[in-house]
Amino acid sequence: MQAPAPRILIVTDQYHYGRLLEQHLSTVWSDVETKVHEPSHSGMFHQAFAAAGFDCVLLDHEVQGGRGMEWLSDLKARANFPPLLYFSSGADTSVGEQAVKIGAAEWFVRERIHNRRFASVVQQQVSKRRQAIALFRARPEAERQNKFGPVTIRGQRFVTELASGGSSKVYLAESEKAGELVVLKVLGDNSDEPHRLDPHQTFERFLQEYEVLLRIRHPNVVRIHELGIADDHAYIAMEYFPAGDLRAQMREQMDPERALDYVAQIARSLAAVHQVGVLHRDLKPGNIMVRNDGSLALIDFGLAKHVVRSVDITAAGTIFGTPYYISPEQGHGDEVDERSDLYSLGVILYEMLMQRRPYTASTPMGIIYLHRNGPLPVLPDELLRYQPLVHRLMAKMPTHRYQSAEELLTALPAYR
Image (cartoon, rainbow, N blue to C red; front, side):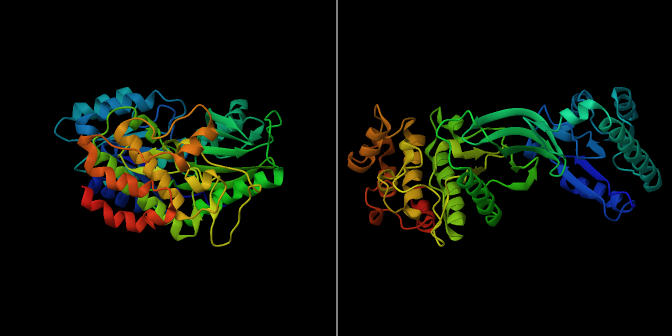
């Protein structure tokens, strides 16, 4: 049986140099799999990242303006990390020699890579890595690292539990297939949870979330890596956001330009979602994640509704969503459409500008009442130019709002 193609992780801030290393690797293996990590764009690796899905790592000395040695020291301190090959300038050979002392398997002059030597070293290190992995998997701790509660999920390394509620648990894991940390949502029988949904409804909702995410490929929507079944438990592996959600950004005064940029990104995500006939129905800061590069991504489609097929797995008369951000019609159990999500976006815009929510009350029903009957929120004089935008988004009647995310995107430049 032929060995699988090696997977190589390249760490460099220079796109063209990353491409050059990929070309060198392709002369050794035509089917080699590579992934380039650019620290200037994606930041440092999470402290729990161990490159579990890779056979070898190529590290450029010039990362983050010559901080390659710091990266090397950090990565070598991580348990079971793959072999590291270091690439430094030929102007000072002592740098490469120091890298080997720290733990690099070998070093190369960035500007002069000899193909034959490079191929020999990489092949040797890939072979060593695979032998080490085979030995590790025979040890008891290998089994434990794939445990998520009572569930064993091969190819996923447990890092920590993030949340538990309803009928699923959420973990931080490292996916060998994705080659990065992921959020692992595992459907389970949480019998200690009160007011649980019917198991059939729960599974339908879980699969619905996967189906929605699979249909939407957009930069401002969370990426999904995998759906699987393990020990009779379904799971979804999704993109992880170390920078957290929008709530963290909203705790301090936000520049209006930045707030409008965020509104535009969220509107683009809603346009993509609505285009495939889906309503989000739970748009709130906690469901809007921030990437290291500052871009936003919409998550949590567990309450989403397929408009075209009219699939609604909620019980009649049941209100779902978050009271602070819910539209008047959704709060009263009326029929909703795309304009309901836009109302929620208007609430988020107001909160970004004011650092407080437009409607508060002592009970959820009190908040829902204000969404329909309370006065439209008023901005202070210094933000008055954005008043029409907030009022249009948060209009009580859907017919008075923007009629689509595309219409909102067309209107936004007038406020910039």
